Length: 243
Image 1 (spheres, rainbow, N blue to C red):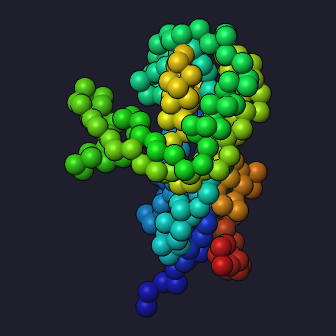
Image 2 (tube, rainbow, N blue to C red; image 1 turned 30 degrees about the vertical axis):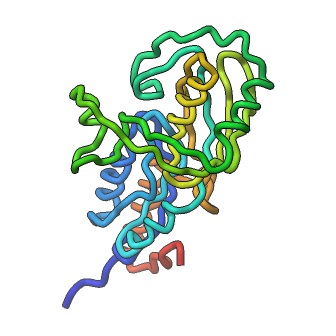
């Protein structure tokens, strides 16, 4: 007789606060070991230099990943004006642009309202996980290959500047799936004529799930081990979340 699937094989949604410098797949790999099943996936990549909400689905709940990925997302972070980088963030070295000292908050806000709010066309960064010809484009870019990506339509519902300390802008963005915040930073700098790059990013919400509901890696490890300990003691492990 086949053993009864444990809680995580049956399916569970885990909200993880992704640490800085971890890739999203680093988190998946860690969780696969912890939940003792290979059937684990995440609902939307976060870059290594980003932190915040990562939705992990285990077991049968991996079928729900696309539903989570399609939901609206919210981010906070910082943009630095007056320089740009090949990766649009701090994974590569900033290259000086034009001094943005003459820019006023009014000019920046008007530019955002005119060019970067609502339905817009956006070209993803060439240093991204998008596949072209079966290869990740960041792998091609690192080899010096000429990569051309098509612009895509995305929706930016809100793009608010929450603090203006030139050359640093603190922001909050609410957007559709497929939106690259790095591209928003780079494109804003280009339209302003001074250059810009993303210097910090945190995903705070996916649909109704919020980052303040998420567990650290250490807390997730403790939670998961507690479930297996209860199972070994013959205690009910509880129902899978997300039902």
